[in-house]
Image (cartoon, rainbow, N blue to C red; front, side, top):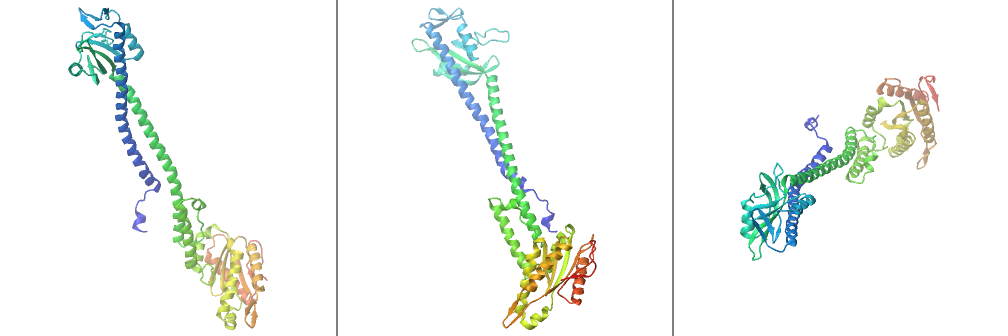
Length: 434
């Protein structure tokens, strides 16, 4: 056995899975990482838009109540002449409708808010983070942050500057959403993307496995075909499953069949008669002897030496080819026919001895009827056959030698006959039939 044969080999289907699934797995990991980033970015953008709308809506609502300026004195926030701190319904309705907190800052402190502490008290008079006030009051711009700390709780927050009539910024309208609620929604989306990625990977692996399995089965058929071919067995047939494919494996299967035919002719066939030679016959016997109930016949062309002497070797070759063709046409579908040497033929028949004798009578009758034209001379040939059948556990050599002995009994008995031995059917030993 070769060093290659001793090497542990991996299944092609798993190789295909590695080739196909690993890139998909890496792509899935990449998409998962990217989805986390893109989902978070998208969620931040959507939250920013929503909070911006709420903060602007809060300010617009209070502006519609009173056209005056915001003011704060003695704990009371006013809009023009309207006291706002006396009525939280607008803010509380916004929180109920949107689920988000809102705040009105005057200066850098919360004067009205829906944000409450653990005891349910509104967190008024608490200060805005320094970074927020610097941005809004310092630059006069709206500001969004994903990490606003409100008494230890992280918020997504959007701030809109509140200006008085002369353009000075005196406060801020704020809309905020607890960061943990945003993260829960974001994580649900990310988990959904991960589940989809895993499903796609598993689906791709399953599809690749099914496709790979079919390919591997086809390759296995081709491998088995070539393996038997390497062992000299030219009796096998390429699987129709391979030949029906519509890809390169079908081409490989057809090429293997062509190789078998070429090798069969070159190695296994007698060049003249195209029958099996001795070597190929022994391979056939080794592969099929135990699985078939063979009847064996040894046949010989009578007085063949006289054909060569009287009509020449070319005519002798014509006789051999004709006899071989008749034997092949009659018997090869049910077994095999081999040129055993010279004008001697070996026949293996997968069936009963009676069936073989019936076939032999038919073919020897046609051979006798054939008239060969050798110019100014015409002649015919006959054959003598010895027929026996394999008994339980008998080896091929034993059965063949018995058939050969019967053949020579026929030669000594006058030729042009089929000699059959005794068997379980009670055919008398030495029965000679024409």
